[in-house]
Image (cartoon, rainbow, N blue to C red; front, side):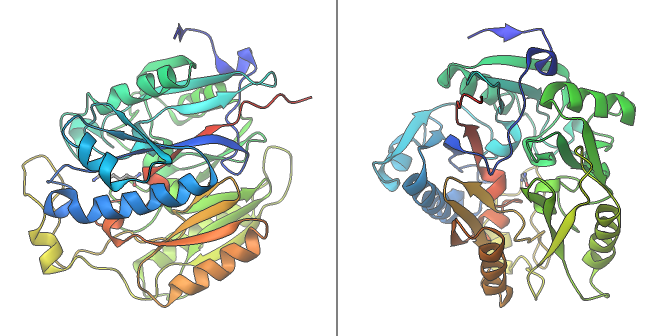
Length: 369
Ligand code: KQY
């Protein structure tokens, strides 16, 4: 497949909203022992559960290293496709391709440079060269030509679009030192507009407290549909999350989107009790220089907003918290035509993300009249 040097916006390609129809979903199998406890065994069960649920609704492909191919194939149901591909870890949302479509039903990919969430400044592991090639390989599998940006760092979890001209990001992440500090905010915004074909970028100040990605938007806020967003929220003014959610709320309710709509902001409560790493969990992770340590008692960035929207379903993390049920209820109200699939996801959270971070959609090649 070709590497393109043109600009998606000029070529008539846009990034669809995640809630638009998909032709499938990608996941990468977890195995690295300095991020996943006990050599990834508990996480593998959860990833297999996520893939099995998604595969009931749309084609699901799991990428796996040569070392884990047989194990993954054995743990996954036959309706999930397994393909071998080298990788550094399992965050396909971030290192995978961002797929675009045009009105003629052609699919293309954007292949951002990936530097493990901050490179040598505050990145989470080294090296990351195999992850940086995942997007290109996904484009090959999808027969999609690819726009490669060699000097623009971005992860898919740091953007959300309504597919209708508006993009959401956090300033905390997009303006972080380890990403594009050689560019101004205006230059970053222009690149996003050109490569995702949007007219307006909403800059939420910060993401979830203690989020190791420098506050990815996908843990904080999501589009339900154009004009409506769902925001991670707490009513507890003593919680360090409160001021982050409050400033995001105040910002969003005073904003309009690209089409001039005032935004409707739905609040989605974070877990009632902070989710902390236990001694046993901490001890199960290999301590390696250059990888973020997992310490007993550390608060994890748990948020139900890190859900994945697919064909006819929404997959939302559960943490064994009283708010799990509230989250399902709220999402069912917001997505009346989709089945809400609640999946115990503590093991994904322990690796530093959640269901949205481990999935990447391929939009349907639909011809638009
Ligand atoms: O939240 C994400 N999008 C990824 C988190 C990566 C954590 C690596 N340890």
